[in-house]
Image (cartoon, rainbow, N blue to C red; front, side, top):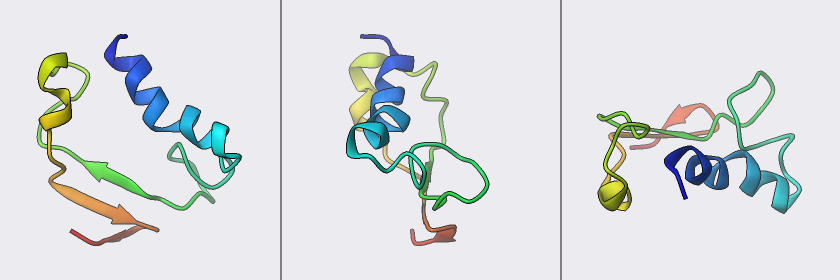
Length: 66
């Protein structure tokens, strides 16, 4: 599985499976704004180390919580 498909599984596709795609799964006006910020570009990171990337910042409903 490539990195783009993995990210879709963690984001919009996961939200669709849970029936919450109108609230979560992508960054769009009116959605909850839950997202992570990483130091590195996950699209160019080594797939073997993908799960070891820790977020630099965590946002929940638009507010920074970490």
